[in-house]
Image (cartoon, rainbow, N blue to C red):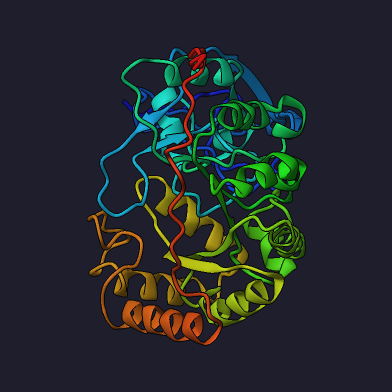
Length: 365
C-alpha cells in the first residue's frame, strides 16, 4: 500500500540538507518490510521547515546470545560479534544498511541515527564460552557494523567483550575504520603476545574531503593511518583493507593506500569492490548524484561492468571482487602492489589451544 500524508510526516524519504547535516544518506525511505510507505509533503504551511534535525538515539537491548554464526565459504571466519545495530559512522556505501529494515527502520538515515546497544554482550559471551560443548575458533568483531563507532566511547561494550576474550585466552579478529581501537591497545597487546589477535583497519580514501562526504562520522584517513602505526609499534598484527574500492571515485587510490599503510607498519592487506545490495544501491546512487552529479553515470556504468550489467551480484566468491575486465584489472593491480610492498598474505592463524572455559576449575595436580 502506498499513500501520502496530507500533513507533515515524521518518517519521510527526501530530507533537507540542513536536517541531515553530518550524516551520510540523503533520504530515509520506509523499510522494505513495512506495509505502508510514508512521504513528507508540504501542505502550504511551511511545516517541513519545523521538522527537527536527525539526532542519534541509542536504545538498549539485552540479548540471549551474542555470537552470530555463518557458513559463508568466501570469508575467513564462521562466527562474529556485533555489539551494536546500526552505525553512526554513516558510510553511504555500507553493506550492513539493509539489516535495519528487519527492525522496521529505514536503511537510510535511521541506520545512522537509530542505534541499538547490546548492553549485556560481555555477559552473554561469557555464558556461551562456558558451555561444555563450545569449541574455540576466531571470533570476528565488527563484521557487520563498526564496534568502535562513536557510541562505544561511552558504552564500552566492545572493551568489555575483549576483556572476556582475554580472560578466556580466546582468539579474536577486529575490523574497524575508527582510531578509537587505540583505546584498547593494552588488551590487544597482551593478546598479541600469545598470538590471539589480529586487527584490520579499513581505509577507503586518503582524501579527507571525500572521506567527510562519504563516511562523515568515521575517523579521518590520517587518524586511521596513525592507528596502524601505533598498533604495529606494539607488535599487534595489523592489516589494511582498501574497502570498498569505488570505480571512478576511489579505485585510483588503491596503490597509494597500500603504500602509506605499509609504511605505517601494516603487514597484510585486502580489498573489496563496492557492494550495493538491496537498499544500498538506491541510497548510494542518490548520494552520488547529489555529491558528484557529473560523475555519477560513469561510476555506475563501471560498477555494472563488474556486476554482469547489474547493480550487484551476491554469489559467493564474486561478491567481494566482482567479475569482468575492469574487476580483473583491479585484482591484478592489487596483486602487483602487495608483492612490491611485501604485503602478501602471511600465516595469520591464531592459537586456539590456550582457550580456558570460563568458570572451569583448574586441576590441583
